[in-house]
Image 1: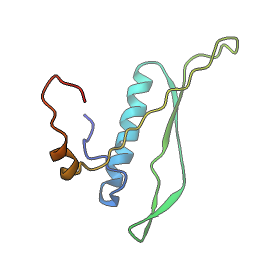
Image 2: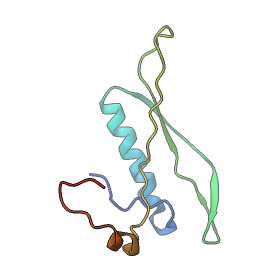
Image 3: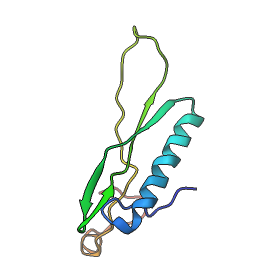
Length: 96
């Protein structure tokens, strides 16, 4: 099961983001995708130099005659701001 606390902007949750990358990598491999985790180096966050989470890259098939499609998504999250949540009245089964 994945951890819902993969907050990339909070260095105390950086290990959770790395675990989420591994989770996504495992899920894609289970679907038959050839994957690799690409290291992005380091960043300074809150005055501490820490590793950036990896990018999960995947490939399906080897036929160069077929079209290429790029899918892009995030597996990290940002903390919820209670100020924003309180200002947006959302009810179950409704869209914004």
